[in-house]
Length: 295
Image (tube, one colour):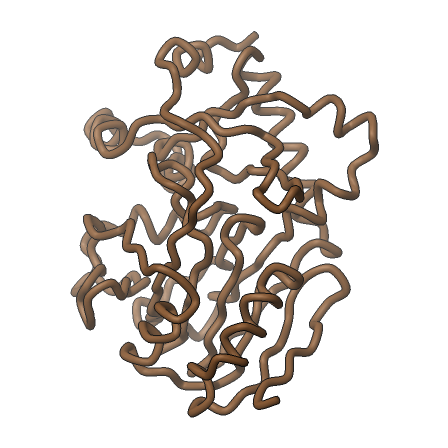
């Protein structure tokens, strides 16, 4: 075969060794699809793809989707390529990028099937920070006790854009709150997501704003404990980027975050592969209002 995939950690991560000229080969694409389900996140060290090759690879793996077209940085270098950067010449609204400092799942606050996978390539790096951490939410769920699994079964979670960017500002202005709330409706998803293949995972992240039927404090405390559980080292792979690296991860079964950085020269190019599973729906406004109640 023209591709070799090596495990990085027992429960998460794989290193893909392949020549750039073979990236679009059928056997490589099939091996990557399989490994993405088994390893969660795959690293192609210093493969140095162009936008054209990254888009072609994205298209070979599935149907391309662009859910950040309204965000500054999208479609700058090529259609459906999003430049992730704090460079103000490209991104005049840093809220979205700064929000990636916190654990999240891409697209979870939008009324659409969750993106199946995200493809990210390193073009320019920061002097400090900027590593990306990936947490395997299937492994985290599987290693809960039977009693804990029973406690979580059937619980529903409200996910909001406001919650995902709230840590960026601490006390955002009413103008910012109104803008965030106008962009997307709050979404309701199962806390334990049963995937089409029968596997189960947690569906959590900073955007998880509360649990339906529980008071705000009780629901958020449970979500906080689960996020801490899933972020244990055994479930997490931390990628230290090199220029030219390409990383793809299973967005349906992993949450991720970037280690904070301040360098405005850091630029990553992101493309996304559409999914076919939609775990939730727009939340009932009454359930969202209940999140404001402490108990």
